[in-house]
Amino acid sequence: MDKKSYSALAMDAMHRASKKAAEKAAALDLSIPVWKDDKIILVKAKDKLQKYAQHDRRLEL
Picture 1 (tube, rainbow, N blue to C red):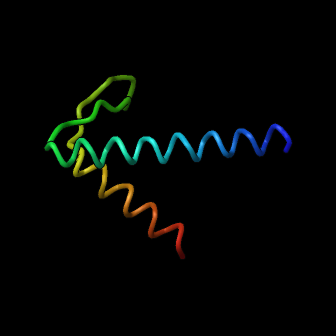
Picture 2 (picture 1 turned 45 degrees about the vertical axis):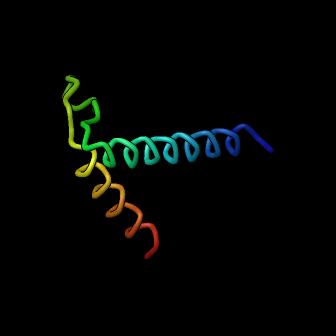
């Protein structure tokens, strides 16, 4: 495998871990810290999961 393959695998793993954390936080009705516009804001985990679902649907097309 070349370096590009390893970096793609690492990015995929980080995305899976982020989604898994959002699922656990949503089950507990928690918020997730997100970096946006040079600030850290708290986003409801359920909202974040909806964003992941929309992204996954776009990838399936």
